[in-house]
Amino acid sequence: MDKRLNDLEKGQAAIREDIKNSDDIFQLFELKTDHNFKKVMATQSDLKAELASLRTRLFLEEGSREHADTVGWDAQDKKWRALDKRLHAVEAHLGLG
Image (cartoon, rainbow, N blue to C red; front, side, top):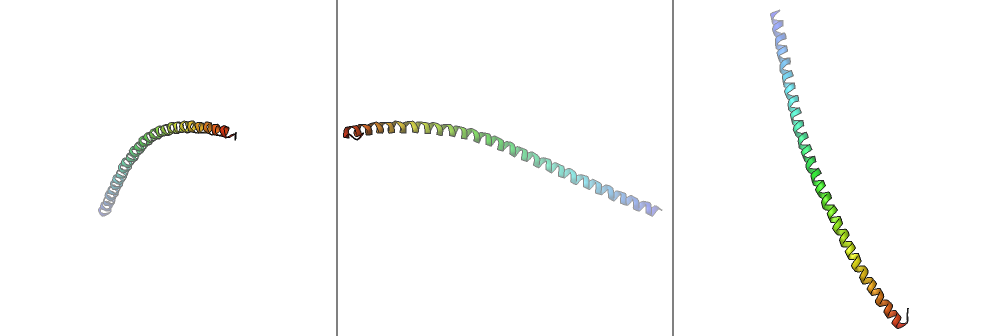
């Protein structure tokens, strides 16, 4: 009877040790998962900040290009109008118009 009781106690001790090891493994897994999750969140935050900065730079670039296009168009339009006037004058002078 003592031997069976001793075997049961050893078995229970082994089970307790297995449970403790399992708890330690799960706690380590939880801590690593939490750490990695926080790293992902930090990276996501950095990416959001970088995207906001990129949007701002793109907006400014778009505005400067739009302004340059407008200025270029206006200058080109003036040149074409002046050329058209001169062409009409030459045509009138030659009697073609």
